[in-house]
View 1: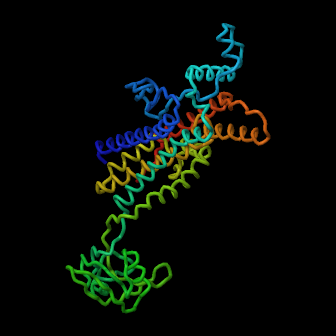
View 2 (view 1 turned 90 degrees about the vertical axis):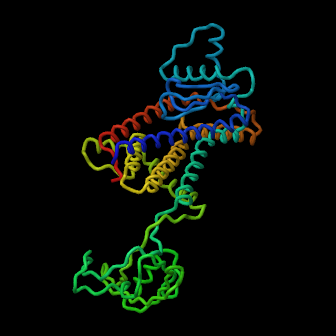
View 3 (view 1 turned 60 degrees about the horizontal axis):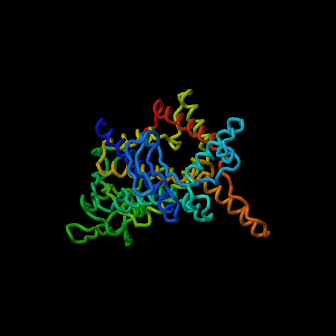
Length: 424
């Protein structure tokens, strides 16, 4: 593999991932602004700011670490109660434990974004909060469908077509590749097949691809069947008598035809179907993520082969992208491979962000739904409306989740450096 092509593959993946993150955050930004929430920042990446520009009340920019992104909305949580009042009154803060301090700091930081108006997230109706938080993962799903559609309907699927690529001269014994003087002539050669013929029908049945033609031939050992082919713009009917060969204990017909392989474009809805089918597989991986990460960590110490269907870090995805780009294959095959990889990454972002744990989008959706259930319950029994759910109380859980995510990410990065998965 060439180093330049390998690097290009990694760069394309990083750029594609950055675009996916940007689209994800746009999925949050657009409904937030449409619902009147003040958005202070729209950032791609974390860490120090590399570039930013303010447009209206929102600062747009890029940060140094392209490992995610965020938008900062006013009032993600309800205002903090007594502690803020004590601070404003100049009273000393109460001594608290570690997690309590974290809760206080989260509340105080949130209160700084509230302002003097009602353009805050926590005051929105539940359905609007859900729409805002669901917007990010939804955009990744849209990206995956778009990429799969480009892959299957724009480029196509490699398929053995009905065009004859080559005709064998004999029926080799015992699946040998070379013909000998004693081997009988291949049925296709005896019937007059030529390279470039396009098979139209076999035994009276129209065929759309080589698999259909091959199935009929295999079911007709020793039988005389008519095969209509198109040659030089005209149709001809050839008489084929497939030779009988034993395969896995069964007698099947053999003609001695090799077909041309080409990209065949699929219906436009194929991309959406593929996205749905792959989503199920991704859900299976995410549901077993702790176990699979543990197995990956174990492989580092035991030297065992990693599960090819296991999770990857961005480092591992970059290695695969580099291998695809540098593979000894036609450029269209490599482009298709990169597109498929980016589509899969977007599905992973879609599913992963819906996990109902803070700080993920699914956690904010769960909080909003719980708030809605409490309000509906109070309304049903004619009780006063409850106070908004204070998600800052979940900061300790959020802290633990973040630590676990960093730990799992670190394990996968080390594994992808020391014991990487490869497409070869």
